[in-house]
Image (cartoon, rainbow over all chains, first blue to last red; front, side, top):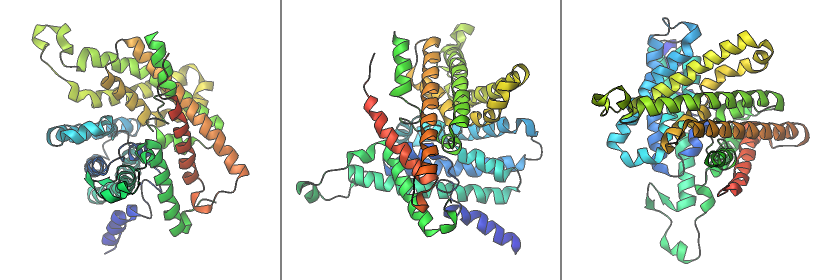
Length: 208
Length: 205
C-alpha cells in the first residue's frame, strides 16, 4: 500500500508542487526557444517525455554497475543515443516541425531536467518508480511549454496550432498582433508571470 | 576580417544568453554573486574555445557526408552525420574531465577557483549548442570555429557577470513582491536585457 502511495506522489508531484521548470528551474533554454508556436512546443514536450522516461529506466537498470567517477559520461551517452532516435524519427515523420526545432532537439541531451532527474532519482530508485518519475516530470515540463506556447501564439500571431482564432472583424476594427510576443525574450516574461501566479497560490515556495 | 566579424557578431548579435537563451540553467543557478559568476563564465569560455575546433575537425573529416574520402574512394558515399550528437557530447564530456585533471595537476590555485564549475560545464547547453550551430552554419575553417567559440564564450561571460551584478543590487536595495523574489525577478531582468541586446541586430564590421 505504501509503495502505491509513493508511486502516486512520484508521478503527480512534478505537475505543480515540484514542477521541473518553475520550481526546480531546470530546462529553461528550450522553454524559451521553441514556444513561439504551439505545435513545436507540443512536439518538443512529447520528445522530452519519451527521452526522459526511457533514459530514467535504462539508467535505473544499470545504476549499480556504473562507476561513480564516470557516471556523467555514461548518462550523457545513454541520453544522446535516445535523442538520436527521437531526432531521426522526427525527421522521418514530422519533417517540418523538426526543421523548426532545428538544434533544440539535439539540445535535449543537455537539458538540465534529464541530468537532474537521472542524478537525483534514477541513480537511487528501481526502474518502475523511475519510469513514473520520468513521465511525471516530462508532463510537468510539457504543461509549462503548452501554457507559454498558447499565450505566445495567441497574442503574437492570433492563431492556435496554425488556425486563426482572432476573428477577422477584430483586425478590421484596428486590432494588431503583438509582434513582441514572437521574440524569445517575451517567453521569459510569460514564464515569470506563471511563476508569479504559482507562487501566490503556493506561499511555501516563496523565497524570503 | 571575416573571422573578426564572426567574433564580434558572436559576442553581441548571436549572444548565447540574450539571443538564443542557451546555458540558462547554470546561468540562473550560479548568478547570485559576481565572483562565482566570473569563475563559471571563464570556465565556459575556456571549454567553448577548446571544444569548438575539435568538433569542427571531427565534423569535417569524419562526420559530414563524403568526409571520409581521405580514407579512400570507396568511403566517399559514407554519411555519418547521424552520429554527430553522440560524438560531440562525448568530446565535450571527456574534454571537461581532461581539463579538470590537467588543471588539478598544474595549477592548484586555478583549480580551486574554477574546478567546482567544471562538472557543471559538461551539461551546459551553451557548449553543445555552439557545436551544433557550428555544424548547421558550415564554418569555413578551423579559425572561424575558434573565433566563434571565443566570441560566444566572451558573450556568455559578459552576460552572467552583468546579471549577477544586477541581482546583487536587487537583493540588497529593492523590495520585490514576494512571489517574484529570486527566480521570478531574474527572469524579468534577463528578458529586459535580451530586448536591449536586440538593438545590436544587424551590426556588421
